[in-house]
Length: 424
Image 1 (tube, rainbow, N blue to C red):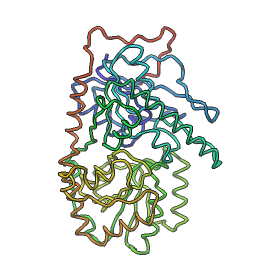
Image 2: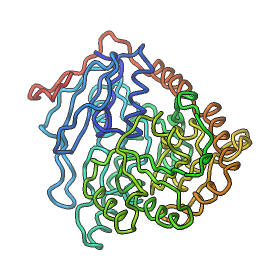
Image 3: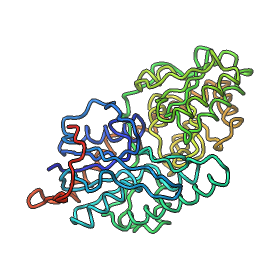
């Protein structure tokens, strides 16, 4: 039996991204707890493990989800009854399928159900996401009317699943106040709700040089090449900047294998706009290498919660340009008065607006002193409000409060259950 069983949709340890990085830090940063993990996936391809697994991660169970065959058919578990890890508490990292499974365990066995929401699923679908983290596609049709109908349907479906998870969970955590307000609007009990911001190691990415100091600016988007990150807007902004910043280079850093069609679309767009030689897809890079080579980060996402890549860039002393989604404005400009007093760490633009993104990047390039000041403000903000140690301390206290005693706790498998795919 483990202390905590994390229930994830896609992500760790097979997919690189912000949630996976967060999970890896949580497990490794709380060695006093033993973890198991249920990985829910709707992807046909078996992925390889992308992380060095911490020694206190004792077991991984992969559960496949059947995709829908008809537009309004909900997914179902496969192969059926599940044999799940035994644990003292079950911690789902989203509503949707993960929250549904954790809620079923709570109803059947009375074991604590902790919910952490990084992104709000139904809001992401409403904002343009075509699939959820496990790879389950909510939008497959191409006709405009079909897409609109499907988006309404799946927004409503995942909204209902969120309400169900809020009712069943013993503790509801999210990463920013904007998300907490959405949870409360959907009926979450305020007494259950709390905000634990994401965190990064405050000094691990310390700046090695002043941004925009060498006359050849390098602007990067760091993130998965998927539609919700709106890489297309970054590419169009880069095109607008080429005439005004003839020495500038643009890089897109992150996995390109999570939506092959979108990646091909982005490469084709860059070629059509004449960006060959000016814009590069690097694939994944270690954070130290990534941010050391950038002068500024530009994040053009349609939807975000509290992106780790922004915190990493701020920790590295890099000014940021972000879209006004999720907690991005609060991260850059500050929330409370003591936070705002630290100064802005970058500039905020409307989503899906290449011109505004280009103008913001241009402002940083033309005023290196302002860019450097913003970089220093970001470092101060991370040290004051977004330290990884603070995040880990909060979860340590939450687990200690909710975990049931080890003795007398069992999670019997169904007599008809087939063993799930145990990888460890």
